[in-house]
Length: 482
Ligand code: GDP
Image (tube, rainbow, N blue to C red):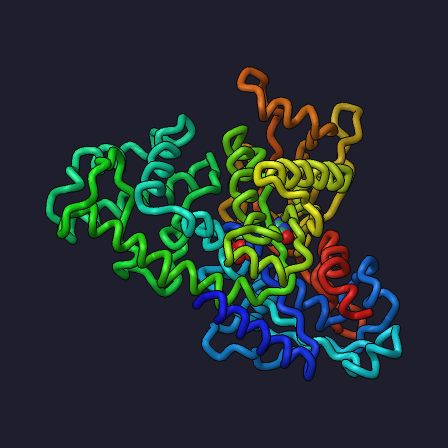
């Protein structure tokens, strides 16, 4: 059974943990939240003596060495750190984003502050970083649904005001089909395609919506085109059972395969073996997109947190949460803001997390919240305009980026006024919850190139600059390097 398999994995991990202290850190977040950039920056800073004043082990000089070693799981693709780092640092371009699961082992040698640890671990921690799409986590609720419930939920979400125009092609086609008619592969493929197009549009659109299961429709990994992914919810399902050979029976069967061949093994083999988890969220993008996107982010976060919540009847979440003892929710890309707004971003992210926890009746214990930029692409300055001092950020916009009618070439620096975040999270969420109140004004989000890494006089490259990456490391690893 799944339960026995997870228990066995846990035992095996515990046994190897005795020989070799290991921490399995999950890194997730919806696509483009910043997972690839975060892992690359984390590894680079640890390997190259980054400036990490709030990471006690580094600050006190106890980190001796960090080096990559072969990962323990041969069947999982390796996180291509060298390629990503080269692109980020040498080319000053953002690396390719996460498309599927990958893993990387970083071995950290440290001088233990306690004699006990020094004796038992020899001051060596294997950090196994597991990178995977947040979309896949959002499939967990599907395990508790049958095809009828899944279809009902998907249809009512698609008919909600924020989505209905994007869902129309799928809804119209699906509505015109009699689910009891004989199954037809071409029809199944067309429905799956229209449904996927609708999910993709919700994400790509300036609406920036987050809750879009089934997760593999947007992030198929290596399953693209397989029958387990060639299904779609059916609106207006009759109450009567599906006749053998009907379209409805085919969709039902494939939905069940999706759960048993795709979703369950993913949780069992990967999520259930994590010790700690960081979830990256692009809160600013959601805030800019407006009320629906903020509420949708909150809903997605509730689904994500319910995977890690302790004491649930669902055996998978039960086993996952028994092992994960710390979760960090990090609002990324804080370098788009002047530092005066970093605490405001953190306060708003904390409120989103509280609201998400409340949705699922969780206390939020063992959850920490942070505003962070894994890679800081900007610096701050003061600009004088009309006799007033304005806090601005300065960076090199990506090639092709347009600001106020001007197109940038990727070489020239510019200063922009990023705008302020609301000072009071209460009033921000009042606006979110009321349908009449206007949402606060936009933040000016410019896509900048990664920073130029400075060299010292002796030609040594400095490490990647960041904002509060050290606090994230201290929370996630600090106690294991004590
Ligand atoms: P993933 O899909 O979660 O792997 O997302 P990526 O790590 O590929 O990040 C997506 C994009 O977000 C990048 O191409 C960058 O444009 C931007 N980004 C991610 N992290 C940062 C950051 O710390 N600072 C800035 N300025 N941009 C970032």
